[in-house]
Image (spheres, rainbow, N blue to C red):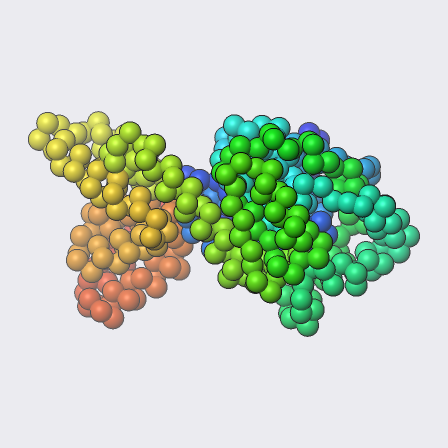
Length: 388
């Protein structure tokens, strides 16, 4: 999608459950939102994942000027505003991590937590950035590609590394220079002592651009933050060390969910929040309006015991629990509940193709008649959903 932020056309991709917690992913200098593809695919099973192209990168507009870190941070906050998102977990790599820190310093109430990958409080020496800006102005991105790629990855022969090089070469030199100016001019004092949200700092042990010593300085500047070091990883490890980076992100988010759980007044309140996120406010409101003294105890039992104690557990993603519900309900022939959970897939991120695969499994292991009945019901519900 394309949105306007202060007159700037910004390209944004959003995926995952509509009611999931927001995770904002900010890419590095010289790449695009696609640098996060593997991690976005994993996170979108549970979270609402938002990825913008920074100004001057990807499909976003390229103002002809030097950018500032504050301007880039306000762009990112503007993305959240435009999408109606009050708070987000923010994860950034390289300049994206520094933008995330600036966001937390500018508007701490909007930032649920930070994941800062291969970044630094400041990026010195300034002369190096000016040299890069001059080089791309004269010779385009090819003038810096070899030097940059040596720092980004350990193995340039990998298909993913060749893809990163293509991202770099396709970057608008004006946009690259604008963001390089922000890196040149940013200072640690702009964020030091101003970040208090839960934070995980991630760094590759072979990152030559923002080495482990820079990551340690970031950790020391943010009280209570954690440091995760990825072995055999350079400056842009999201492809080359895909599994390790994804694990670092999901571990951070699971810890935040676990830490937040005791704050809930009761399992029933936690269950009500999940129930609404999965089934939708309209369904829950209708159900509540029909509740009587006869079924209220049963409603409370389901709310606390199922929604509040099972669906809130961190062991499975919400999307995976949705798939399991579909399969079990179909196998047992519980058509009314099956229809309810097919409708819920609009909020859990389960696709029509995945529903079809689940029902094939049901046919194989629970019998063709059960799967046939479930398929008929699912088709009817999905047709209703497509019609609005």
